[in-house]
Image (cartoon, helix red, strand yellow):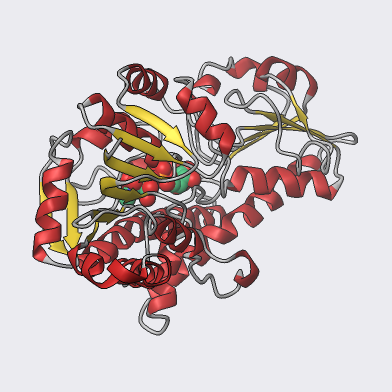
Length: 417
Ligand code: SAJ
């Protein structure tokens, strides 16, 4: 069977996108290199947590329009939604790792039909869509020599970055405005027509490089603004001012909207994407780099607060509330909370407990490696003398403040105030 759409990468972006197209009547093949992910989806189930995603995926699979596989097949459109992290071996320079995009692109060469539209959704450095075309033409030249040049000319390429907020993905997937940035105007139009199928927001046409930069700009804007809040929290600590009260008051100005300080910035987007701009324009991107550094250093400050609190007790038992990178999600990727708990365990100051209602087991680095115990909130409150609020999960809002009495509380989000 020929598909309307083949989505490469069935993670936080690929899976909801594939599913929503399928529920709108498109024949969709979802491709993931992990067989367990493919089996789970074909059984109508999900391997990630996101409100209502299970219902959407089940509906998509039951309709017969969504099927998952480990290999791509011929399709009118390919959507690449694979991770674009920075290179682990170059943590100092934070250079982007496009190997997953390259693999996914080369993967479709044996099956891509003439005239196909290839859309890059993964957040990518400026110039990546041009690279996608280069990789695909190169691979066609190797695996389909005779037809490669005619086929290559017929293909269309566009960058259409995702903008959905974890925790509100399904709502934002449909309602957010989008950008369709083609390598040619015709590719932009084709991409716009495709997303029209489910997107009720406006879809703006531009070129691929502007679309790539727009996505990086959006996340850098947020990173810089969070860094401002985090920097204020350090200044206020020094000056003996309650930063939460300060921000609440400053935000009553009609043109001031300061974000909230926290234990640092996590997730696979905001802590990563600004580096793609810094890497591309290191001399110019000074504010963007500094914001990254301010946010990356915040966990160090939180650790200092917890260490100071622990010295109040001869046998400290430290309970950390939340491991996820932000409230009400199960995603631990690039989470400052995980970093803080790991380093506390490594300190050996005392027993370390973690409360994370969104996961069933701790990551190995914390459990086996660090001796951290995953407990529920009641057990943590009963056993610990130092409480560290790292994530403002709704589940922690109702905790009876009387149970905090007599304990040292490090509230990194101003959540228990
Ligand atoms: N954070 C704070 N203080 C705040 C707001 C956030 O410390 O006032 C922290 C969070 O706790 C978290 C991090 O920042 O650790 C990022 O959280 P977030 O909710 O700001 O953003 P993400 O990473 O979940 O999603 C972002 C969104 N981008 C923007 O809002 C510009 C989303 O729209 C993008 O689609 C997503 O990145 C992405 O995939 O790029």
